[in-house]
Amino acid sequence: MSKSLSAPLLRTARLLDLVPYLHANQGISIKRLADEFGVSQSQIESDLTTLWMCGLPGYTPLELMDLEFESGFVTIRNAITLAKPRKISFEEGLALLLGLQLLQQRIPSDRQDLNEDIDSLSGRLSLTLGVPKTVRISNDLNPEVVPRLIQSMKGSTDIEIVYHSLYSDNISTRRINPQSMYEESGRSYIKAFCYLSNSYRVFRVDRILSCKDLDIPEGHKSEAPIPNMVKDGLSKHSKNGEITYVIEIATVTRDIAERFGIHTILQEKENEAPKVIELASFSHLWIERAVLASASDVELSKPADIRQDIYDRAKSVLNLYTS
Amino acid sequence: MSRKIERLVNLTIALLATKRFLTKSEIFRTVEGYEGSDETKERMFERDKDDLRALGIEIEVGSFDPVFLDEAGYRIDQASYQMDLGILTPKEVSLLSLAAQSWQGAALDQPAHQILIKLRSIGIPVDELELPAMSSRLANSSEDIATISSAISEKSSIVFHYRSSDFQNQIRTVIPFALATHEGFWYVACFDPSVENVRIFRLDRISGHVSKGSINNQFQTPANFDFRSALTQSQSNSVAIFDVRKAKGQLLRNLAVSVKDLGEWDQLEIPIVSLENLRSLALWHREDVIVRSPNQLIEMIVDSLKKIMVAHE
Image (cartoon, rainbow over all chains, first blue to last red; front, side):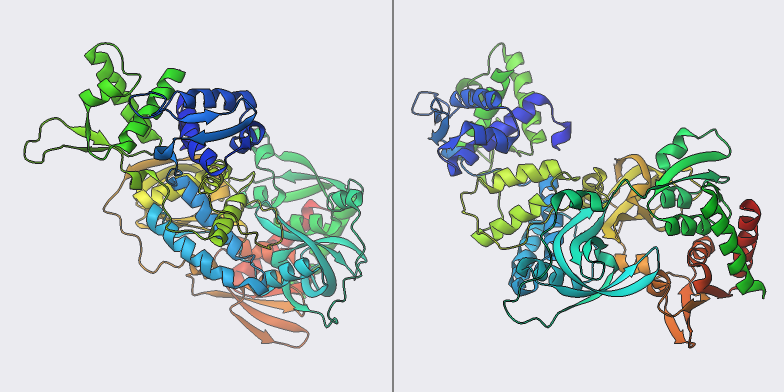
């Protein structure tokens, strides 16, 4: 809704929303008010000046809203008609409903009572707003795994996970100390100290096959070192060790575009054939597997060593079928 | 401009404060800001009504006297103007605030910010919930989520360009009825009138934006539609047989409908949705996978391997 509104209407909406906000937050500073509403302080001052002229018909001091803000702090009186916040719009209700669904998946195991509150709120929201029940958000994360991870983050305790590494296609059991959880491009990740590799690692939550609490005496805190913030930021995308490679694409398919993440490049090279594209990856193994998986639609022209590996690998897999 | 804004706020206050309907002439006489000829005032008032409606404010039209339907009157019902979720506890307010905060920087950021302001305007203190701080960027966030959701609730069709498997853009006009996330992607389930059947689209494969089409009241949402099983269980009855080395091929194991222990290997039955996709999966796993059937898939794999060797010689 808000996107298509003209500037004066957006401002009208802000004025209507300012009144109940001030009502509930008497004496708030103009600076905080500006931050809350995402506009400049002079804009808020001009909004308040306009509001000051508004009120009930008659428009004598008795009917006008009573605003004070010269001191830099705002109080409001005589605005009872607008004192309650406006109703929730469809988009706002949707943001709440989906946000609640997401929240529900991250409730720690010792606060399962919150689930009931979330269910009740979601029910009320669906009903009042007509937000369809068929709109669902979930990150399909293992319901056994996430509450445990969150619990161990809360208590700063260690936990044991069984993890599937995609590129090497290996399953390993690791003791980790989870630090934080975040989402990126639709995937949930957990940053943790890993005792197996003795370093901070990022794990994809959906690849944690199972996890269990470690038998650690009560009150025994983790031995994981404090994360080094500088090193931390680099751990996932370190510039070192990046491999530059070049692929030639004979037939473009959606699969290939998605596997290599090259939609935009492909659109730019629409009239080129074959399409030659230079890319970078952190994993030799991934490049090899990705080219193989593209069947014969992608040829790796550089680097030579991976090219050789692909040839050897294809030959040895072919042997499995022909021998 | 600020006179118009002032007038809109004053009109809202006047229509909210009145218990009975106010006639147009009363409004023009009492609400500050209506000036000029009768015609000008009329035009102003019509525009103002439209503007308030655009802000989601419903103006009731009625009459004082049900017997003599004389001059129409206007008012705004307090109950329809105000936020109403019943009585909220401090705990519920905090849960709603956390829910809104999970959109920071993502698709519904803007409405989420608006609703946070409203939640902070109720005057209920927030219960500090001890939930771990978590930054969340919602799955494949797209501005289209709101458009599609409102199309679902209105039963209107949507129109968009979709990238098909051969990387071509095709225009689609379909009636959506369910929206969900799965493994990091947003999916919308729709009825496609051109094939008279249900089709599922992945939102990140839509190029450009989704726009709403016409409303279709005849449309009935399919009963008992289960999004999860529609995405995970293939309708196909045919299966491919994959031999997979022990402790390898986790991706394939996730897809398997049965597993048989063969010692060093496991034998998996995998439903066939797309042979091309199964070929990719088999090749990705290199020597850890041997496909046993169907023959067509084996031939595709062998053919690809030969071509890969020729290309990389």
